[in-house]
Image 1 (cartoon, rainbow over the protein chains, first blue to last red):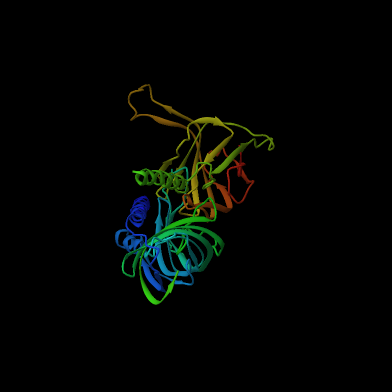
Image 2: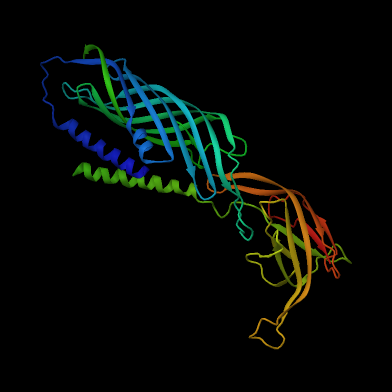
Length: 233
Length: 181
């Protein structure tokens, strides 16, 4: 599933970068005032995944505010619930998160266009709980019947803080409506882990890996710009 | 065409990344999971020396006294045995069957008149279970704390006494229980 989302994201990303370069007439003589304002949106990939994946529920709203020609303050607010299961362990993580930081536009637009290819930084924090729905005691010798425990232990009050580097694209599809894709590379700074268990999934961070503190996630956003004022280049 | 090639390249890279993540979902064979009980047989007369038990086979007894055959255990002459413990209750009943043989009454093709020979002793192992988290792939293992061992008395016990070497079974690095015979 993740592979499918990733491939769609990249295919679409390529399509948009082609579009961005094809149309546009260069006209240096006209001074064009760029729009400044608050851009509000949501993550469509989380909504899509909520619909198609029974083990996932997620919702995220995001916003950015343009400070200067290339600099934006940006943030996300969301909730996620994720059930992970295999033959031996079934657990659910549930909670909400907030992320804040900046986006820097690295793309030099053609005349009259306000697209972004950007890099950004975020600090994220999550408050969540984890529930062990069931586990089967792992025995290599299965002569005796296997023992499955359904006690449903819940670990509340878990937290995590992480940093993110974001690479992404935002393109103005029609007037003031933007679509965007981004890749988030994450590193946990600190986390509160449950006793005799671990954080399998952290809302906002995503799944964790045995290999260490790093994680990766993708976003597919649609947003609307509330123009507040215009300013020349 | 250039973008097409680039897309393929990026797709390949992400596939490799995704594939390399999959190892988290497989419980590595090297993981120390639920430990088994290790019995070591010693000489009752010279208690420092190990002593082999001839033609020994072990099997479990369930709650209905039905025989539970252990995987990977065969009739053998040995001075040690590795036995799986029950992870759903706080005890395991084990039959140690010495000098195991079958008298086929001179009819090798007819097993209805066969007689099982040998000397069976039943040992009871009791313990407190504790489930310890391993990893997302392996889940939990059970460890067995404060083990106690008793040998059922019968007409002709060959296993005469027992001694606990390690009371908390958390690994399979050394023998946990001595059986004297």
